[in-house]
Image (cartoon, rainbow, N blue to C red; front, side, top):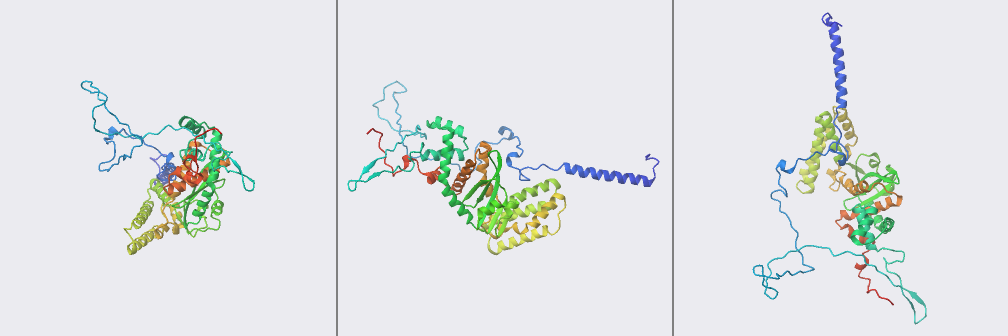
Length: 458
């Protein structure tokens, strides 16, 4: 079409067509130019996030060490186990022998050292006795930890479990570590057998933890993937502030939750929005606000949504209010008034649909789960996030990344049992190796009930 000779109606039609094409291209460009999902605006794992390259310290002019005003701490000296006296042997000026000259102490220097570590072989001799009264023969019983089928003692088995499950040392590297550090030569198969026996002895403790968690009025849960014999399975955690129970099963469905709970019915279930978690038979649910804040941040990044920013601000204010309540700085009528204001503002934000496809999707989510957003404001024993469950799974995630998959079903079950006992000990502030000793038995040389004598022949 020749625009110089076109009529007004033809020019208007061309302009309308061009405007339609521009709008279509703009929509396509907006769709393609959405911001990427990162750990800050989604549930993308932190390990997959972008790590910026930090400039050298000299370039930013920051000093090394703690910030100004930090009180600082230093190691306290303890009473010495070994004392070494350092006397001068001869005069530094003339060379005179100073062996018999009087001296006074002018300084001390203290270090901590480890003695050489070497395995100790303990052999139990079993005796039988003829009763002088009736003539019956009575045979002694081997002490626990010295059974004939054993090769290594309970203390070593607990230590192997600690290295493998807590420090994530593989069987092959653990065999090398034992040989180099302890002078203890074990095959990877022997180590695997020791771990299996330790897990078996930990099962009663794990079952007790399961009952403790199941009886809790407030219960949090989460799950993560696990690879077992080349197949995908799922590691679940059910936890309270005092205990964590783990299990690894092939399913991620709600049947796992129902089987774990049995006849128990928690008052509050804290989780993310995974449907099997929301289907837990609890009186009410608290959804994880940390997940919601990240999803709202994506809407802010993608659509510059004022609505998403307002909801973000409101959720953060609610979490801050709970912290003020827990610290005793906001309570009584003042606290109730603040909670009512937050509830009212939330209802106002959900009164009308939000603009933008991503914002409207979250608007519908919050409308559907409105009663599950601020449960933590009504109960001080309910957290606003499911971060505790994610932290409970973190050691197992690291174990999976370091060691890869479980090669057997018993290996996966053993890991879940050990994770239950050690995760609970970690929450209770108990030394993890001490917790293993308490559940499986002290090293034989530390058991005061046993009487040892130097090895000798008969």
